[in-house]
Image (cartoon, rainbow, N blue to C red; front, side, top):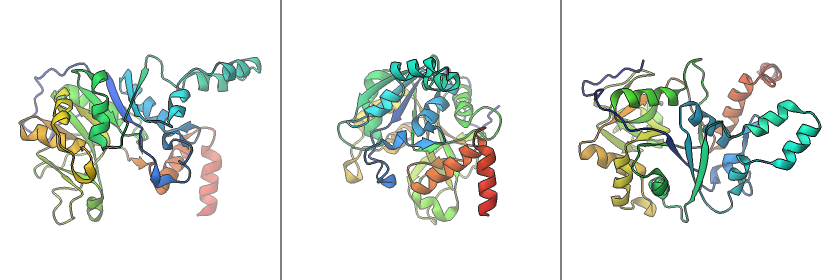
Length: 309
């Protein structure tokens, strides 16, 4: 059971139904060029599944049934991947390749629907989330960044599933955070939990958020790592959020405004480890971690790693 280090939790509140997850996929993938020149970065494979499929499966396992992709031109391969491929399925069936047939038939988890909206211009994460407003309506929602993969190493419920449980327990928004070395805090958005440091699997109230602080100024070493469960009010605040540096609308600004007006957000400290597939090193690390867990690749990969070491 997820616990809180704060005395201000609102366990008596009743959260609204939580079924919609926004996944922004409109990015250009410049950190993994030239691989992403003609292929969406979200379609790069981690072992035998594209990154986006891992993320959608994570969302489905946590109970989300409505996936909203915020996309742009040139990214139709993502939608195609989750669609039915009659010719391929027919050929695999004819050749009696049952395992492969099932793998392509279940790229989209059962009971999950995918919708797509367009982000005409890259105006920041907040703007991408705002593009999904007509489909979210007045519901609480999740935002899941597809760059970040979080393998389930606990053998229990995933971190996203446990964060959903924390949302239901406390009746307020949750932001997944991960402890990072203090000399690297300036790379991330950092949360301030008023000197509290929630243990892995626990959460605490957020009093402020600081974007890429200098180590000496950082209120903690807890970095925001791409998983959010947010109240519907955040979508309203995004419509009022002015563009900041680079002309972009930042989701962090809207969340900070929510806290300023008395709203509650909590930081959920993850138990697993995230891998940033938006850069080359993180992408290779993810392939290694997932490859060592895959039944078809783990033995040969383990032997290779041992040989290299």
